Length: 423
Image (cartoon, rainbow, N blue to C red):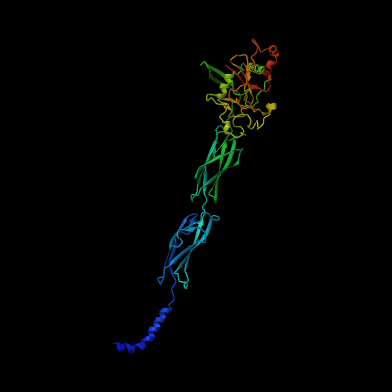
C-alpha cells in the first residue's frame, strides 16, 4: 500500500497544492443585512421609535452595530441591533425630518460595512384651548369670572395669558389653577360688551380663543321714591320712618341741590311736609340690614383706582375722576341714579356724591353733616363734629337765624346737600 502511495504522489501533489492556493485566495465576505424596520416613521416631539435590524455574516465574524442621528435626539443603546430612538423635545416648525443611520461592521478592514437608514418625521402638535361661552353678567355682580381649558397632545407644560381686546377698560386678574385650567376675573366698571382672548402656549406653539361678556345697563331706577325703613333704638324701641331715595330734590337724573345753609335745608323739607333726616335714620339707611360699611354692593378695596360707574361717586369714579376739586364741588356731582350699585335697599348715594345735612336726635336742637362726599370717602355714620346747639327756644324764623353769632357759622356752609324724611 505504501509503495502504491509513493507511485501516485507525483501525480497528486500538483492537485493538493492547487487546492491549498484556492482556499488561501478566497476573500472575507461582508456582513449582510437581512431586515430592518421601525415601528413608526412619524413621532411626536420627545416620542420614541423602536428600531430592529437583523444581519448575518457568512464568515461567522462577530458583528458590531453603530447607530447615529447626527446629534439629534438620542438612542437607548447606540450599539445594539434592537434599540429605541428618542425624538428631540424641540423642533423647527410644525414638522422636521431626521435621518437615522445604522452601520454594521465585521471588524474586517477589507470589507465594506453595510448601512441602513430610517427617515423619521418628528411633529409638533399645538395645544388647544376652550373658553367659557359668551355670557351675560349683571352690573351689580361683584365680578365676572371666566375659565380657559387647555389641552396638549404631548402633555407639555402650558402657559396661559389673558388679554382684553375690546370694551370698557378692565383690569383682568388671572391665575393658573393647574396645567389644564386658568381662571380670570374682572370687575366691569361700566355697562357694555367686554371681549377677551385667552392664549395658551406650550413653548413652541400657541392657541387662542375669544369670549364676550355682556354687561347690560342696570334697570332704570324709579323717577321719584320714598322708602319705608325701620330701625331699633338702643332702648329696644322700634322706629319706623320714610326716607327719600335720592338727595334733594329726590328725582332721578337730577343733580343734588346744594343748600345755602342748614336752615335752607330745613325749610325745603318742611315745604314738602317732611323734615331733615335724623342722624340715626341716615346711618340706618346707609348701613342697611346687612350693616354695610358703605351704601354699595361693591367693595372699594377690591377695585381699581379708577372704577367707572361702580361703587359710588367718590374719588376714582367716572364722574369725579382722580382729583375732584372741593372748591368746585358741583362740577363733580353725579345725577341721581347714575351709580346703580350705590344704594342700600332702595336708597341711593348715601356714600359719596354730596355731603348731607342731618338733624341730631339726642338734642333736637343741633345739626351736623355727613363726612362722606365726592372728595372724601367715609364709612356710614361718620359725621362732622356736631355743630353747637341752637339757642333755647330757637324758632327757625328769619329773625332768629339772622341773630345767630359767629359761633354758628358752620350752619351756613353752602357745599352741603340733604335729603328729607318723615314718620
